[in-house]
Image (cartoon, rainbow, N blue to C red; front, side, top):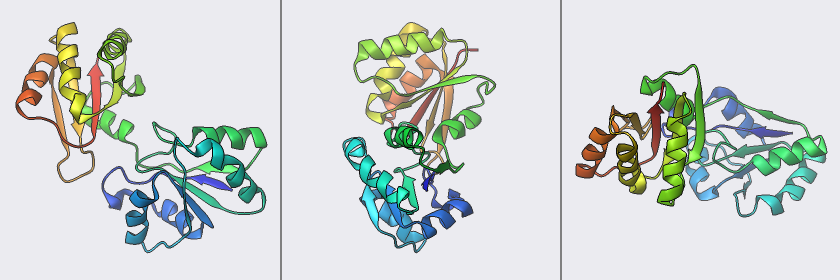
Length: 220
């Protein structure tokens, strides 16, 4: 059976007991990046064969993994952080499981999307998540304009190197747009910055952002 296992988004203590049990009992662990996952597994004294499974090799790996499970293997699927498939590898494998009628299960666990939504203080009853914002400014502006017109809290992942540019675009669209920048969630330097787009643009111009960022727009 395949088990899609969420891993901590920052704090190692956030892994669930069930996730640890699955990882300890697995015959093989497929990781987005074995170099990234090995320290987490070592921390919990889990020593299992590892196999890389990422966007560039997922299609090629699927037949091998499907065959192993059909022959009785238990394989755990993890990404670098959080829930596999959510802006991470695993979608093609999930589709193959469904197409081939291969048994799988998905464990609940850490998610930067839901953590940021809850911590932002923005409306939680309806929201959209659209992964990483486009790199090109024109496409990014269109995505932000669509989100602002969507009528529900909008959530994106954003690079710290592009955050200033993105806040500038938001300030140009609507200087008073309510924005939350959730940074380094669950880690030592976790912060939530809530203010207008214009104010946050000014703030991060003076204090360049670092770390992993979730950007939220309150468009209620």
